[in-house]
Length: 353
Image (cartoon, rainbow, N blue to C red; front, side, top):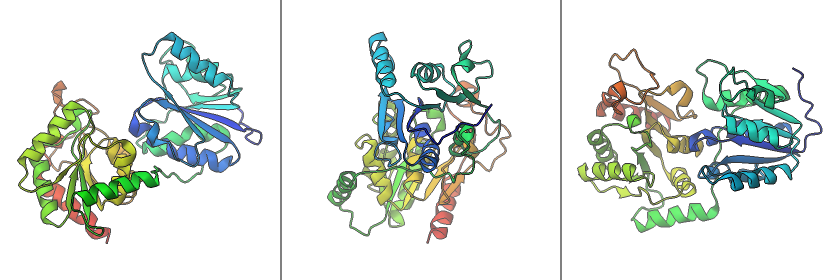
């Protein structure tokens, strides 16, 4: 398959119809794309609710959102919107059928996508002009996502995950912290113990112990969680177990405000979830607990990190399953001790001096 001549490409659509963390981890590919074609205009199409991972990004001129379940009239309107923009190039960064169809009917002459290898809708591979094979390796997703740039001759770009906030977001957090008695130079640690996938969560009592440890070490701890009722309930249980008085921001911050909080913080402690990736992108030192998911592929993409895995024997790691035997609880993750988590925090803080 011939390499694409990028010299005349002026209008690009990047499709990433996945979750929050997935969209954020696509930013190295977008950055490399803009670096290779600085005069091109890049539009991103993402799921509703994930757009804050790309808004304010200097490489992205516009973010279009897609919402599932809105009906045929809505989807036809999206198609018309895409076609009238007359894209030269469309890159679909996922394996899904919807992205493939949207890439094809966008009208772009050059369409790059993931080789379906017979999966998904019949004939999906024919919707693209250039296919990229999926590598069965354990590279980080931020790196493997850049494979779609291969047909464009972009193969040696430096991967960097980026996230951006506004001055208003930053000021909101400064005011919020000040209102909670946090001085300008006082260190803040964010503890994000929840995930939409409960099998990725640690024991509530163990999280509470780490919060008390951080507070005793001189940090003001901010507990965060998504505004999902299951996550909020978990955060409430944890806070009810502590002996100190952490700040409870669970369910109270949007994604940009949460990112601004990470930028202001000296430490993130949590599990494998989108805010972990956001904290890493914001430059915050990250300590993350991992169990059934692959820390090589999905760990925090930063040099300022410590990944904590169980020291017990679990040859099944990473199993990629939703808990042991479908229980929604992961023994490998729950077996991590408070002492192991604290040791990782101390090691990272010492290295980050």
